[in-house]
Length: 345
Image (cartoon, rainbow, N blue to C red; front, side):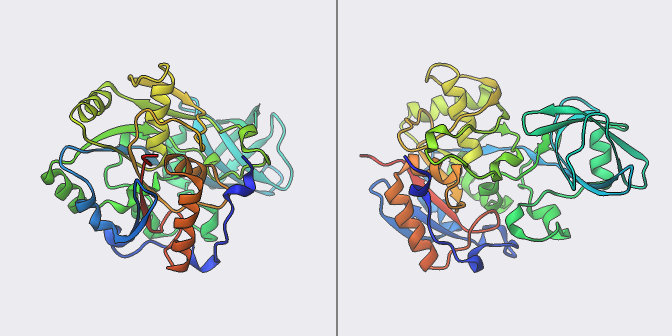
C-alpha cells in the first residue's frame, strides 16, 4: 500500500486554527457500518450512542513543553521537551542554527536555567536541566500547539488545548488527544445520565504524531514510541461492555492505540498493560477492542488517516473526506469530528 493512496486535496482555509466558542458546537460526520456518511452536529452523539456503550478516553495532560532560550554564544534555540526520563533529564527536540554537540550548554529565562546536552537517542537530544523540569516548564514554557496553526500559543489555548477531564498528575504530553476536545462537562453528564459509561487510559502523546511518513510503501514506516497505560479497571469495563453486546467507542486515535496495544501485548486478548507502544494501525489491521471511533479530520498521508481507514476502509474514508471538504468541515485539532463505525463487511 502506497503513501499516495492516502492523499487528498485540502484547502488551507479549512484548517481550524482557533477553537469554536463552545467545545461541543462542532459538526460531526457519521460514517456508518455500510460506509455511508451522514451530516450531524457533535451533540447528536447523544442519539448515536446507546445506553450500555462505553467511551474510552485518554486522560493525559499537555505540558507547556516549548522553551525558548539561547546558546552560550547568544544564538537563539528552541527546546521542545518530548519525554522526561527523571526529574532533571529529558529527551528533547532542539531547533538551532547548528545542531548542538554533547557538552553544549543552553540557557533558558534570564540565563538562570542551564540545559546541558548529554548526547543523542535516535532523533532526540538527551539533556539535563539545572532545575526540576516541570518547574522550568511551568515558569517559562509555552503550550506546543500544532505546527499547522502557524501561530504562537495564545491565552485561549491554555484552556481549550486541554480536555475537561485531564488528570493533572499525568502532565506529560506534547499534543492534546484532540477528539476529546469536543466534550464539555455538560455533554459528558448528559451521556452518563443516559447510561453511557466512560473509562480512562493514558497515552502521553509525542511530537512524532506530527511527523510525516517518509516511506513510499507505508509498511516500511516506523512509528514513534509513546508511553501508555491501560489499567485493569478499564479492561474490566471493556469486558463487561462486550459481554452484554454493547459497543466500545474509543475517543481519538491515541485511546485506540492504547487499548489495541494492550491487546497486542497479550497475543490479541485484552489485558491490563503499561509500556511503550509503536503500534502502527493501517488497512488490513484486525481490531481486537474498538468498535467505533470518535476522531477529528486528519492530515493527508498521515498515520492517523491510515488508522481511521483501517476501521472503515480507505475508499469509505476518502469519500467521506472529499464530502467534508466540499461541505467545508473544519480540519485538524480545533476542527470538526467524525464518528467512524467498524464496517460489517
